[in-house]
Image (cartoon, rainbow, N blue to C red):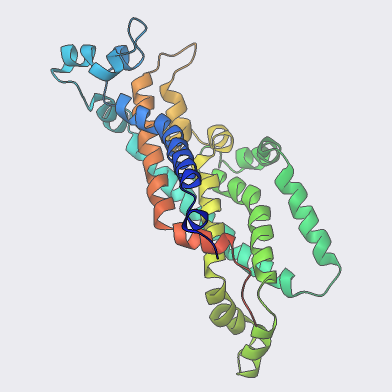
Amino acid sequence: MRTHSEKNPVHLSVLINGFVILWLLMAAFPFLWTVWGSFKVELDFFSIANWTNALTGENTQRTHEGAFTAAAYEGAWLQEEFWLAAINTAIVCVSVVVISLTFGTLGAYALSRSTHKYTFWLLITALIFRAMPPVTLVAGYLLPFFEWNLWGHLSTSIIVLVAINQPFTLWMLHSFFQKIPKDLDESAKVDGCNQFQAFWHVIIPVMWPGVITTGLFSFLLAYNDFAVTAMLLAKENHTMVPKIASFLGTTQTEGNVMFAVASVVSATAPLFILIMFFQRQIVAGLTQGAVKG
């Protein structure tokens, strides 16, 4: 019979909980510090004279009559029209997710149910394209984009991001479909469904967590992209990540680093909300495979 101490090793529990708390603090600190600093002026948050100015807001009080100010958010969102970059990001991300999932689910389902030998080589080819640097794909699209007068528009980044993301979507969804017994398809056909009806009414509801997980990863790819959007979009059509980079300035132009700090917080906060909202579906999708026929 196990003793109470064997069932509940206190020292081990304290050690694990302490490690988890420490890890959470270390992981959350950069974002929390950035949120705090976004309500300060640059002389405080990036103070060379005394780092405690970032806590006390000495220069912020002198300039704005308070320890905190929303000047960085006002400047980024209103003066520099960061709201327009947020709308562009939403358009690009939603388009990429919808297109990638539409073609990805149909293609992955067809490949998972195919008995032909070329299925493996199609997946390997897709994987090779996914491994290629995004710049390679961008270079291949530039000539037709210029000839068709499409360069600088949101549609160009959507096309390239879908091309980059589609192999990953295909592989991920294919692995999910393979874990669903083919007996479900057969049962649906016995009940009078054709192939597409079996796919839509029987298979998709079973693997819905996998679709959500894949869609979320597709969303994050488009949301966090810099290389493709920076090269293909005109300045007025920038998404949030290239817009944040523009706030830092260059050797030729002066930037405003506090605009960048405020916009980083603005761009990161929705990701936390999104992950928290879909956390159950993500876990279910990543652990999917326990479906029994």
